[in-house]
Each structure stands twice: as C-alpha cells, then as structure tokens.
Image (cartoon, rainbow, N blue to C red; front, top):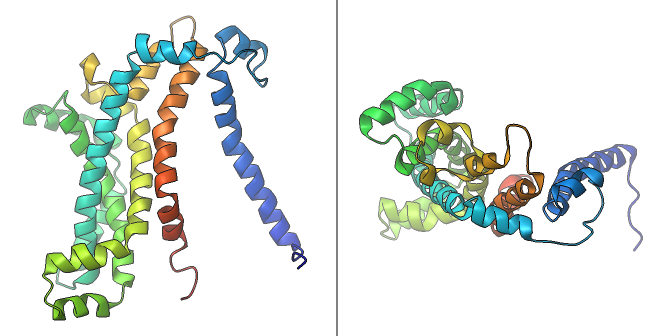
Length: 277
C-alpha cells in the first residue's frame, strides 16, 4: 500500500519537529564526542570525531574530581525527594479528585498557589528555617525543600486524572469489601501509573540539575552534588573542558536511563484522553 502524501501543514509540522530533534540531539552529540577528546583537540576540531577514543577524561572525573561521591549524593537526594513527591502527591491527588467536601476547592487552590512561588524565591527564609530545625548542611533538609517544591505541580497533574476515572471502579471495589486505602492502592493508583511517570520525570530533572539550593544549604564538601562537583573544572583562568564534558556525559546518564525506563508510561500519560476507547 502506497503511503499517504503529506499535506503542506503536516510537512511544515514534520520539518519543525525534525529541526527540534536536531536542536536537542546536536549538543548531546557534541558533548559525547568531546568527552573523549583532550581540551586542545576540542578547540582545534570541535565537530570532528576524536582522533583516538580515550577514557582518561572519565578516569580523571571519577577519581580526581570525586565524581563517585557527588554522584551518590545526587542519587540519594533525587530518590528521596521523588519518594516524598510521588507518595504525598498521589494521596493528595486521590483525596482531592475522588472526594467532594467543603474545603476541596480551597485546598486545591492552595496547591496551585504553590506553583507560583518556587523555592528559590524563598531562599533566605528557607535557610533560616532549616538552620532553626537543625537540618542545614544535611541531605534531609534539601530533600524536604525539593519535595515541598515539587508536590504542588504533582498534585495539579494527578488530581485531574483521578477526577477523570469512572466512579464505578472504586464503588465496585468498596462493594467487594475493599478498604479506602485498598481502593487507592490496588484500584486507583495502578490506573494513574502513566501520570506518575510524567510526575517522576518532570520533577526529577530540575532536582538532579539544580545548583543553587545545594550551594546555599550544603557547606560540607562530602555532601555536595554533581552540579557542584563539575564546577571544580572551571578554573579562574582556564577550564579543563575534556573532563568537564566527560562529567556532563556521566551526569546525563541517570536521566536518560530514567526516561528509557519510564518512556512507555510517559508517552501513555501524555496521550491520555487524546484517543477514544
């Protein structure tokens, strides 16, 4: 069967998508090939393949740059924040989406208001509060800040999907004797798994890449994260670009792996409601 010819609008849209893909993949490709070059070769031939594929940059980052320590710290902070965000936002979204009570709309607006005030705007009050709580210069304090900043957006996303689910599902589960938590855990939560994937990716990327909050709240070198660790390759008079690109490549791997693991659910979540049946 011959393929259908594209219309003008579709061809333009396809061209825009291709340009967007090239705009995203191009810098990633340059980062990858530069990670295997020494710094002079990066400037001499930035778009060429490495003359010899060397891994000295990765060894320098991992050993001299203490990347293994910063990598573990970032993994711990991101995972801890995601567990809190997904757990509390799923329960809040379920309560706001499936139950109608007097303060339902008010509480929903409170969560929406949190979208307008990113944590960076309250940097000084957060610093003072963490110090008073004894959580300054600790991973737990940073995890709580990230969780508080990510929950409003997560509740906003999940509440809409919980409201769209048919009421017959939870009613049937209650008739069968399921508890309220059982209805949430065994019936409702599996149905919003694609949306949970969206929330996980949407909130994990800014947490993993954040530089300002760890810089403000973490003073001990052994507690620092990957973005702070990469800053050591920026010198006052020169920058060691080879190890820097190697570090950026290693830093991007967890996010790429996360997307690959959740890509199927992520796409289902984005296209939910776009098709019938």
